Length: 300
Length: 182
Image 1 (cartoon, chains in turn brown, cyan):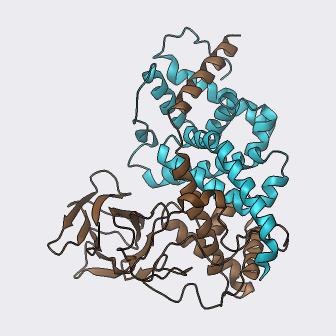
Image 2 (image 1 turned 30 degrees about the vertical axis):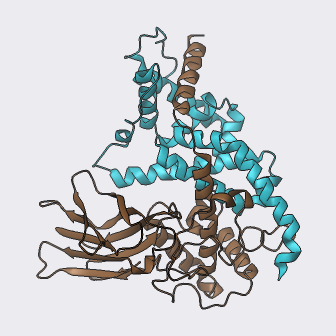
Image 3 (image 1 turned 45 degrees about the horizontal axis):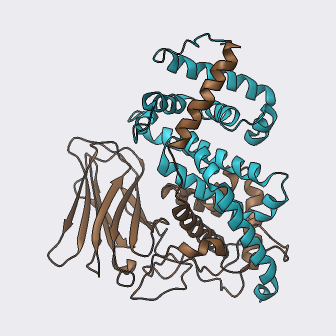
């Protein structure tokens, strides 16, 4: 009976703890919509692989995406949710078959820099393979969630089609590699750019900069990294030409071990003025014995 | 090409999904919150879970309980996320360090304690405790949600509760200190 009491008491405490969080429905909806759009993108990314190589390639794709940060690759997510990879791969295959009118050249290879996270991705939502009566049509985003559709508009360019973007394209040097992406929490007037940086060897110096050129309404709102407190010194500078430079510098005496870190920068911008293709990053690294820095750079 | 033929069913599915979201996002969000201990993480997990649910909407709607199905997705995502975080922060920062935000209302200290204490339980134990004592799921339902044996639910839950009481008991003079089984 003492135990019953204790459990009652615990139930109340858990209720009280849960009450401290009130989910924001609109924000959540927007996030769901963005993810659903991304599912379509990921499905199309595997389209061109021959079936024999698909599984392995998809796995490494999943791993690469996972290392990008909070989002997991398609396979990763499916297997997390209890679906064996084999089934997941079959699902992707089905999705690829459903994706109408998309040619085999899209993903991976092209359009570097024309980044645009758009909700109107061309392929179908996977997972309904073969069952034509149930398969949601192109677009894949539930209309209910459509009201707050987030859209990282690459305004000036108007590349609205893009199931491809600079997102996910890794650039590599001897010591580091970097993979940029537009975080799916971005929306019409605000963006977060992510950069996953992988150290291949122990580093004694690491400097990460992200530059966002001037555009209408540009204003830095924040930045973060997954380093421990005090590991990186983060600064953001508004330059005389109106651009913003974010810099993360490994503090003196700190050391980075091989692995992946995430750096994110955030800013406001006007609806139409910002073009992610203009944003660039630069990563420079040294080991204790380096004679010169090893660096990577590219546009988002 | 097929898109037009599918239009009607598609529309219905979207609508059903929208209603499902409206009815359950709060509850699932809070589950994610209790499991992850962090509002940002909770939001992320919840969004991910709904996206996953849409991906498999047909299965979800065919399930005996669509809600239970999606709840299971939430639990899995939360567990994985916590594992990932623990790896990432190992030797740097304790997971519990994120449990310091927003304290208001009565009994704040105890509530903060309970969250901190929860965070110290291993993921599966925590999930057992939350599903049994916050959701009031039966042992069988909990077992199904987590994909583990009923016996495991029993032992993990009672140990989890005992450990929580242990962690909380010393500070709160609730007079309910008797610890059952170990």
